[in-house]
Length: 247
Image (cartoon, rainbow, N blue to C red; front, side):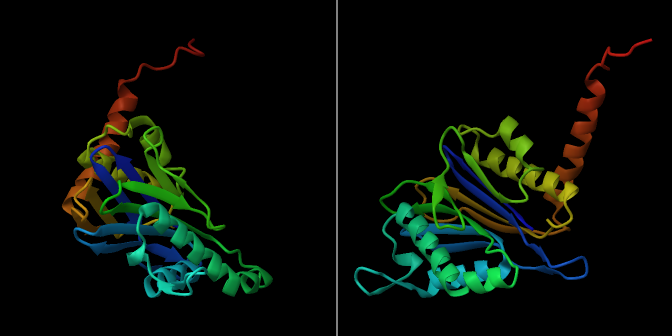
C-alpha cells in the first residue's frame, strides 16, 4: 500500500508521496514513488505511482525508454510529448502495454494488475495540469472544483483536504495541507511511512520550485505532527459536551 496526493491550486502544483512498500509484516522496503522528468524552460512532469511495484517500475521504464508510435512506427518518450494531455495519454498507453505483456500471467497466478498514477506538471506553451491515470489507461483531471487527487490509501488523509483545500489555497498552504494529510494517513496505516518525497511547481515557471525528501529527523515535519495533534486535542476540548443523556 502507499499514499500519494497532488494538489493543484491557482499558484501552482504540489505532489507528495510516501516511499514504503511491503509484502508482509517482515518484508518492508523503501522505494521512490514520486518521479520527476524535468527540462527547465521546456517541461516539468511528475509521476506518482501506487500499486504493484513491478508494474509501476515497468511503466516508468517504458515512458523513459520509449514506446512505438502505432501510426508512425517511431519510438517516442515522455520527454517528447507536446502537451500534458498527450503525456497522460502516453502514460495510459504504457500501462496498457505492460498489461499486454504481463497482465494475463499475473491474473493466472492470482495477482491483480494493480496500478494507478498521478501525472502532473506543465509543458512550455501549455497550462499547468494534473491527471489520475487508471489501470485501464483512462484518466480524469483535477479541476478548480476538485483541486486535489489521491491514490493508494487515501481515506485517512481525505477529510483534511475536503475541509480545507480549495483552488485559491496558497501554494505553501497546499504543501502544509498535503503534509497534514500524509501524517493523518501514517498515523492510521502502518503500510504508509517515511521518507516522504515532495515536489512544488509554480505556475508558468516550467521547472520544479521544490524537490525535498522528508525523513524522520526533519524538524519541520516533526513540529507539524506535534502541532496538529495538539490542535486536534485542543479543538476537541473546546467543543461543548453533548447534552444527550444528561442526568
